[in-house]
Length: 238
Image 1 (cartoon, rainbow, N blue to C red):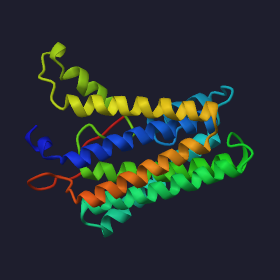
Image 2: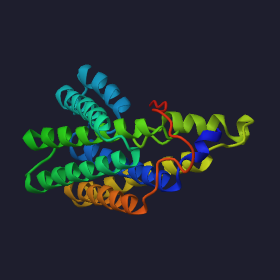
Image 3: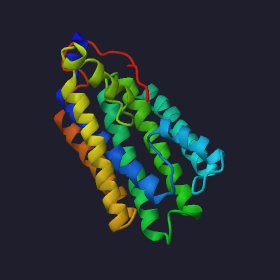
Image 4: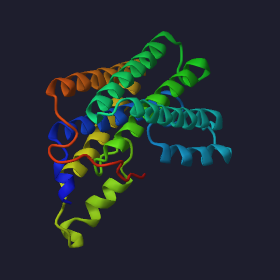
């Protein structure tokens, strides 16, 4: 556990905010782009099985588009990481790219008659899938435990299995609980905006959050690790 204490506070805050953004974006994609996720690929694999079984209102092609775009984004993150050795700079760069892609998706949603069918739907799925793949691939390289920003399976398992009820001492409880709350809050905000306004506004909010977080983190000059050497890619799952 000692190495986990070296994660710098600004980085933890950044990852919590990005987790909130994931909640916003997945709420938009599920409600506004037709029952598909762009950040949670575990959910997408399940949805793909449901769609393949012929369930109404689920699309094999849309889900495959999201999965493929996410993989492309993750590959892109690996390529960028090979050129940017400093992980702090890498995180900032990827957040800026994410902000640009989310902003583009928002513009498409704003100018389109519908985002639940047609070219606008698939274009936004692809754009957002690439953005989430790039971010997830980048965050994985940071090696910050229990803050993948896109999935909560291991986070919830750790929160429960290391709790006092399970005989543990609640290590990393604050970040784990923060991630769960952030995802929930982001999904709620995204859903409210989609249901009562449109799909463009929550995507614009997501873009603004990513851009603002990138600017604040860059201005802070904080490293990924508060002290000591940096770790390699951490484990993640979901």
